[in-house]
Amino acid sequence: MTTDGTEAPVLTVSGMSAGYGDETVLEKINLVLNRRDFVGLIGPNGGGKTTLLKVLLGLVQPTAGEVRINGLAPGPARDQIGYVPQAVDADRRFPIGVKDVVIMGCLATRGLFHAYTREDREAVDRMLDELELQDVRDRRFGDLSGGQQQRVLIARALVADPQILLLDEPTASVDIKVRENVYDLLSRLNERMTILLVTHDMGVISSYVKTVGCLNRELHYHGKKEITTQMLEDAYHCPVDLIAHGIPHRVLSDHDHAH
Image (cartoon, rainbow, N blue to C red; front, side, top):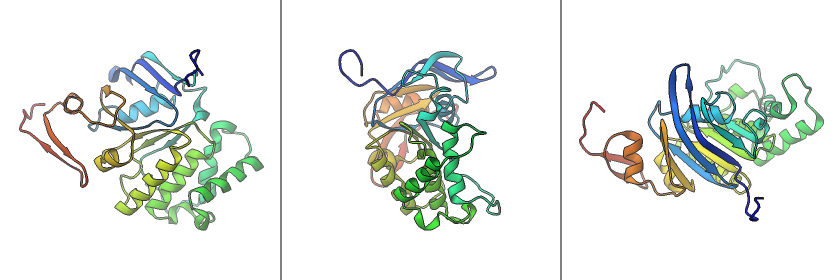
């Protein structure tokens, strides 16, 4: 709680810049997320979306500004964040089971060289039940379908009971039915946690998220669901005439290909 009785933000990014070596990828990023926000983040490839998630996870250090997660820097706050990467191209021959993948999510709180506890294993069982993965709990991860693998990765991200869930194109390689099931699940999870989702799927933006941001080096975010023409033109550097709902597609006006 803040001094005026309102809830404090769970995530605050202030004037943050970051990159790799001499290359600046993110510049002057400002973002505030509150409890149960569900933000969809769009933008062109190479615009810095994955880098932003890495900064929030403490994997990339800002070169300017600061990031605070419930008042802590990303490193000390790592156990408060769950992360679902882009679809994993797993070696189907690798002998790791579903429960082994999920329990890895406890490393954020236990540390790399600490033994798993009975409480950890009970948390795995609860998460597999919640995500309706009971029937595959004893199977090898590589033998699952793409949709099942994504649900297992979400279970891994959630097993330590994080306050914030970060997802990087979690349904990029699954079919429409699986995609709908995953986002219905995220909508339910959003009742108890904050979600930041990177996606190119405009259908997801129109149907599931609460607010939208556009990121291309700089972040254009106004805390609303509407995607304004100015946001898109600032992010994509070309005029955008229309984004249609229903079956997502874009109509772009003629522009200088040099952009």
